Amino acid sequence: MSNADVLSAVAELAGSAQRVAVLTGAGMSAESGISTFRDAQTGLWSTFEPADLASPDGWARDRNLVWGWYQWRAELVRRSQPNAGHLALTEWQARTHLDIATQNVDDLHERAGSTVMSHVHGSLFDPRCTECDVHSHPEPEPVDEYADRVTPPLCPYCGGDMRPGAVWFGESLPEDQWRAAVEAVESADLVVVVGTSGVVFPFAGLPAMARSAGASVVEINPVETEISDMADLRWRTTAANGLPALVAAL
Ligand code: OAD
Image (cartoon, rainbow, N blue to C red; front, side, top):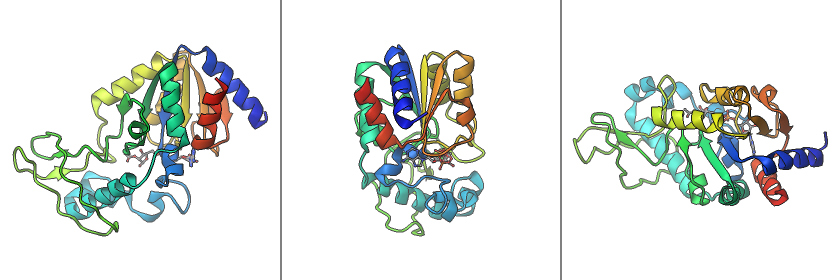
């Protein structure tokens, strides 16, 4: 199928869907200049070690390094802008029931004006206390280089160390966010999966759940992924090209 044929097939599904769920991963924000995790050369995990920076053990070994890394990533996001894909989702959400569940810890969907139902991997902008678990929002500390070690601030309520608001490897997902994502795909007629490699579970299991619940699944990704087989339609395009074209065709 040519790209134009895929677009019209996707637009037909989208036009008749009463409820849409959009599942996003790092590729959603790639055209905003935010690195993905696993793309060769540019992906964060080709330069950084997940065990050092995104795990409870890494945190136990060197809190300042981990806090500094997340502060650096937060600063990169603050300097970035939502791309045309984020903006198209906002427009689509204004026209139809559309739930967004994202693995991304950035806030670019929200800054584009979308309502996000679920941040299943947490947020760069929602740190919490390691002792009392209260979320608070300390003043941002701009970090120019990832290797800047920054001492985590203390919790304003109990004086414990704050930790980043992102979920780490080996941790469970925030229960309410996960449940909302499952409900969104199980009640959708159409699930659009944008910019994820589909290797991190349980999020990567959502397209299969959608299929079992009777939804059509569309993948938007320039390359084949681990979850391509789950998709009824595979659209080899980028978020910032595909989503605006789709919304324009509705
Ligand atoms: P990955 O880096 O694993 O995958 C990014 C996907 O985006 C790849 O399939 C790319 O082909 C695709 N992609 C790249 N540019 C794109 C573009 N412009 N438009 C559309 N797609 C594009 O990122 P995720 O799948 O999001 O977890 O990674 C999942 C989780 O692994 C992350 O949430 C993070 C990471 O470890 C935690 O931090 C807990």
